[in-house]
Length: 108
Image (cartoon, rainbow, N blue to C red; front, side, top):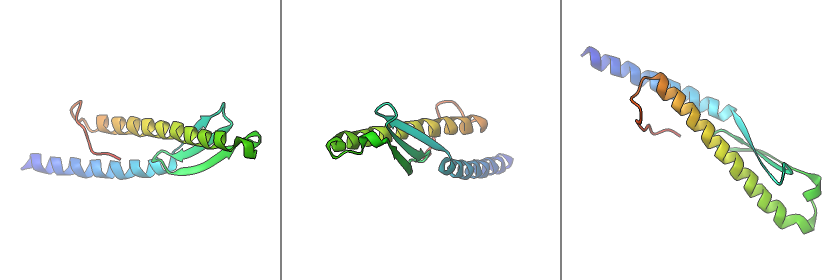
């Protein structure tokens, strides 16, 4: 029965750590860039769009398609960085819990 209590405590600790990590992911931000930094997109680590910065040179009607493509590219760059950050945080949390290597947990 002691093993069951230990498992319950471990599960509760993991749930608390997950909640803390989720809150942290809302606060952490990543930036993606495109066009040599002419377009920058900022996302939370959870993927929420926080801001877009566009160089004045791109604000010409003739540059509309290029600008649209650069926004998409910068967003994709930031999203990939957010995913990597989330994976690193999860790996660190899982290793701190002493879980067996290769165990896949349903995060995110």
